[in-house]
Length: 462
Image (cartoon, rainbow, N blue to C red; front, side):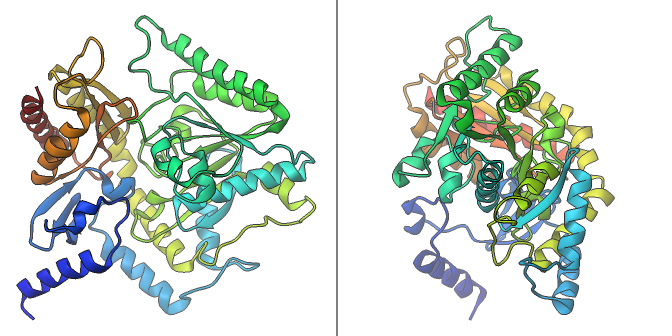
């Protein structure tokens, strides 16, 4: 079979048999399916040889880029030869033990106990069960309610989906896990003119406090937040927010869970985003960047207090498990990935370049369509508007039409893999979360491409 025949065969087989994740039905039609063949650095190359700059790091996970497959693969091969599989059901093995110890040294102080899963959704599902069992062991089984934030994304499994504040994802599968309440997120753009940061922080904390009191403090189990909220566009916390959350949780006996599935392992210039913002959680969930997406792996890191309480409770165990949690091959890949992050100074690269990255993006505010730039580390979003005074998209071309027929195709045609969408307020958002090895020269080139694309695309919308 010739190369051309092979490429066509992949197209046909893919459209016929591969059900792709969150993919519109149009992708199965006449238009070519994008089939990636290989990667190097921050780049992906498709089956026809077209190069794409992956400014989304896969899905916020390829921290070390695409050029370390051989090294991580060698470690994986050695582990496959030695011990290809073992569970953590009543047993341990070297790679899961060493990785758990490593994570305990990297996590915020007091978080020492690690439970492994295979994905972010599984991690948040596990955290829900751990929190529930913790309160049961303390003699407060009525603490079943969770507080999360509007527009937040925490996964697709039953409990994790209930935590989501994205109604367009939730509504088709309701009723979901009962007892989840949602509060405002930390998006400041669009708030009343003249409101200070301190006033915004007070508004957010007062809302949470009021909700806890309304629901009954003895019924609330945990507050679940991302240190930097991804959905809604790189939403960072205002000053005082993290400390205020901790105080509220302590006063009402509520646990604080940090969803670090995206924020962890260098994305924000720290191994955990909680450190960046002074957040002091009782539980952290993680996935994605721990193995740079090279293999599936996730988990939960909990405090000694939480875990010891569960283990001393009536069941004498955490009543949860998964066949592949702590898979020796996945843990070995993660250890190799973390070694590369340390050796190559990957997190230092983020710290050294984040201000340059932010300044380059801030310069885009001079464009008539860029209303806000927000984010930290290597995670940023642009909110696009047609009326800067109103801070809204009011152009004749609707935001959805603009994104789906003009902006998103222009980005893709230029070989830039970003996330372009319309937020819950009807405003276009463009998001960048590149591999953490992205260089300063690549930042300069990339932002110049974005400037040209936004300028041309916006001219078509107005």
